[in-house]
Length: 159
Image (tube, rainbow, N blue to C red; front, side, top):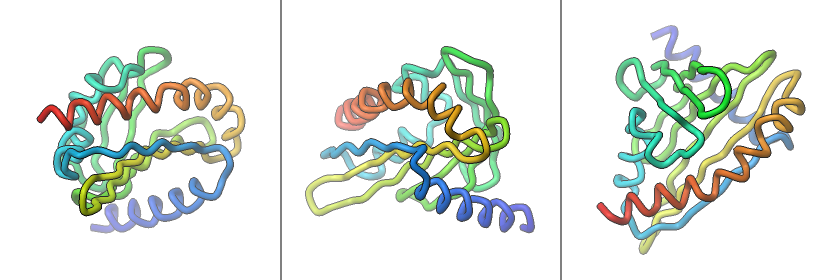
């Protein structure tokens, strides 16, 4: 319980900071798929590689909830551990992975409207070396993100 509360406070702190710094970017898509369809794709960690062309593999060590850890194996670069720091069923979640002296923070959110669903993927770099990592990794991620989001949309709308 203490660990979950700690992760919650860390998530709030990191998310607020991440949204305020200029070393972040996001992309939003609109779909006719349901929020549940997008959510199912987003939380199926072993299958992230089906729609994220920058990822060789991903694994989750437990249930998809606050405090659960996993591993990412990108197509370029070393393996990275991540932890889920925020979770609201069918609405949003945040996970973060350590970078030297900071974090790479990923926030995914869903907004269900009367006729469609907006889903957003937000990426932020925090910490002392955020500028360095934003330049080193952010440019490539930012270029890839629209296609990644379109892949999710295609998969969801086929279901």
